[in-house]
Image 1 (cartoon, rainbow, N blue to C red):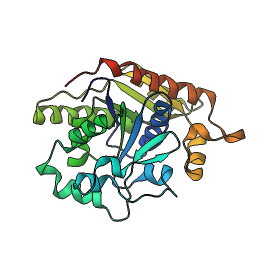
Image 2: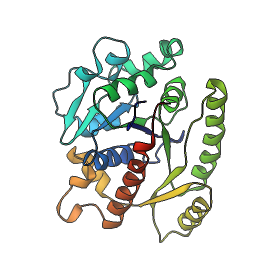
Image 3: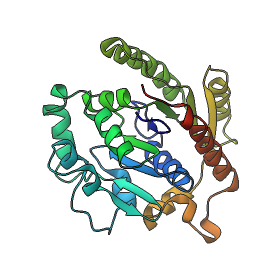
Length: 261
């Protein structure tokens, strides 16, 4: 990874923890300050369906991985945010993950380098909940993993499972994987169990960010725009906005510290 370039992934093996809402919202927040690209590395293509719906899209991430097109040919722009999309229809990314990837385990590191050469300062990967070869390869390629979790017992367990999976990756590929931040997502302060889990999360060694329940995300998906752009009475709660900005700022702070790995 080049100087002044940062790559992050939002990941936990558990589904429904808000990886896509966070990836999109954080990538959008970052795109206001830095040249940012969101890479949809989830075979279901949720973030692409959210943001790239209605855009003129001819190529996707799988085309780049298969070497059919250059990375710059597959990028689409939604407002200030650039996206390397995936469309879940034909499942090409899934096929690539199952068939090709074992032969090219560092292809995502190469992708990050290519994006750096194209002038991007921040690359954000949205991943599916699994821990297949595909997710492992992306986790290997990024500078940092941000771990989203819901305020429930299963997500706390998921955090432990995740830690042991990361250790396996580090051992198998003999390189460190950094993850020091968690986002407790969908917190409802009027639910006792939520508060207990949240407190347990803040007592871990992780730096904790908290995003409360906010209907803005569902609204934004329906409108195919980043949540920050929803106006009127449905707009993002100010505390949600503050926390997203705080996380985006924390991610940017480290950017110039990253030199050749």
